[in-house]
Image: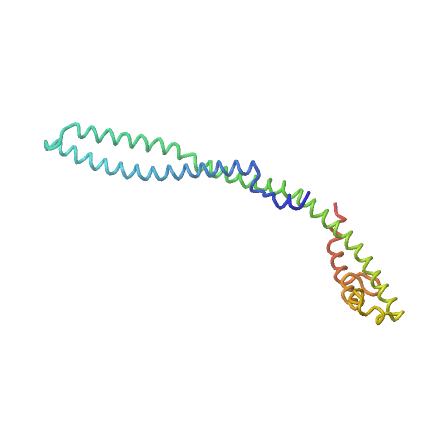
Length: 203
């Protein structure tokens, strides 16, 4: 798979994960709405109960009409019914949230596994390609060493002075980063092969 395609992939965009995450957010938001309304209703009920006592006292004293009590009782009944209904709706929300959170963790693992498969395959293919490139580069580097040694034996340094190749001629130390003058791999290349090549042989 192309690396740019992999870079565009995100396990958090997995359809199953997104669907579960959206559902969880919706349930949590509804739970918060219910909690807020329950708090409001409890405060309203306390106020209405206090007002009902005052209204009944007023009726007894002849200071308030009897329908004033009925109005308060009607509001109080409405608040209590809404409170009961919301408490019933709120009861399973905590359990639903816990189950969805567990499911979301499982979906996260599954989504990461799905992304890891092409990622691992591409890493392996890239490392194999790089290993082949390094092998070829090491061969070419050894040839540069051979050419440099022959140029030394033929005493061509002064003859090559002033040419673009002369800069390459005096850059022989740089060639030792891949292979040594005797053709052996450099310390860095041996370290790379020691680390990577055993992994490439694993299936």
